[in-house]
Structure formats: structure tokens, C-alpha cells
Image (cartoon, rainbow, N blue to C red):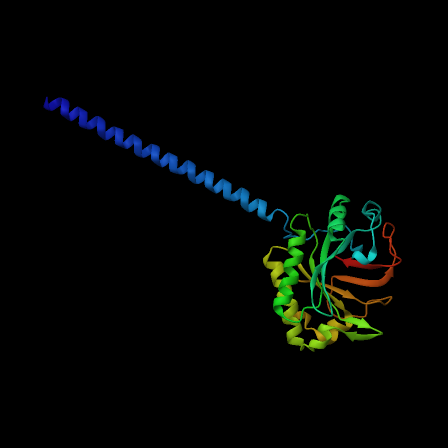
Length: 263
């Protein structure tokens, strides 16, 4: 009887060891499944984010920037004319400061992507503080999250004008150079933290006299408006908007902004 008891105890011990191995295997399988699921979620949440800009196969690429002011655009036709495009997705009114979506943004985004044109987006800013700049950036990010954006998200920093004079809330705020840079960098940081490339659009005069370009958030693309036969801005830049009275087949408006992007 004593011999039988010992054998029984040994069998129970082996059974416990086997259960432990099974438990470890089960935990391992669950961990792998959880990791895989997390990986899928992460990939899904970042698949439309641009970490590397589209690379043009030329030293100087030609492109346009458009908004609802340009009317209906036939993007298939435009695709034969340009290398890239920037699409306005929102703007802040210069009077009461209301932030609105561009009414043709969705149409333009959808059809530019369908026509396989590398594109970025911009927001016409009238932000007078960092909070408003962040709101503008978030509006742009929401607008592009469903699209394969390959170029930057841009803050369009310029003053509203009437009869040749600056008007509106941005002008009235009389921000210092430091305050202007804080507003612009708040936009750019928000864009960068969301996984996109930020950019700043402004006139050569604003860059030269009202901003400190060297203090921009790292990696910010510099886009300069300078309507001359040759660029007169002496600082570093990536994109040159050389005309506001250009033309492009497929764009129904009389004029369209035209640009060069330099490698």
C-alpha cells in the first residue's frame, strides 16, 4: 500500500508540471495576440501621416495653391500641368475671428488624391495667440486624416488688406516679433506632434521684417511669396510663390497662385 501511494503522488506532481507549461504557453499566445492587435491599431492610426516628404524627380517642381476662390477644379486636367498642389482646408475670418472650413476642401482633397497629385494643405490664419494657432492646426489635421497627404500642413501668415492698407484682427493685435513667432510655432508644433510636416507661408517682407525664421520649429518648410522675376528674399527658403496671377488648365478662375519648389 505504501508503494502505491508514492506512485500516485509522483503522478500528481507530473500533472501539476504539465499544467504549468500549458499556462505559460497560453499566456504567451495571449501576449502575442495583444501585441499583434496593438500593432494593427497603431499602423491604422498612423498610415496617413507624412513622416517623409514626397521627393520630386527634378530640381525645380511646379505647382499651384488653391481655395474655394478658384471655383470648381478639374483635377485630372490639372494633373497634366503641375507637379504638386496646396489646398486650403480652412480660414479664420479677419473681422470676428471665426474659424471655418473651406467649402470646397473636401472636393479638392478627394479629387487631387484621385488624380494622384502630391498635395499639401494650408490654413489662412488670423490667429492672435497660441491657442488660436493650435485650433487652426487641429482643424487642418482633422481635414486630412482620411487622405494620403504627401506634402506639408501650412500656416498661411498674412494680413488682410483693404484699399492697400492692413486691416483686421491680426493687424489690430500689433503683436511683437516674439509673439508672432510663438503663434506660428504653436501651429507648427501641433502639426509636427501629429506626425505631419509643418510649413510657413508668408511674404518676403514679413519674413524679413516681422519674423525670426531661424527660430522656427525644426524641420519647418519655408514658403515665400515674392512677386518678382527673381527671388529677392535673401534668407533660406524651399518654395517660391512667384505669381498670384498665373494660370493653369483645369482651374476655372481667371488667376491662380503659381509656385516653384526647389530640391
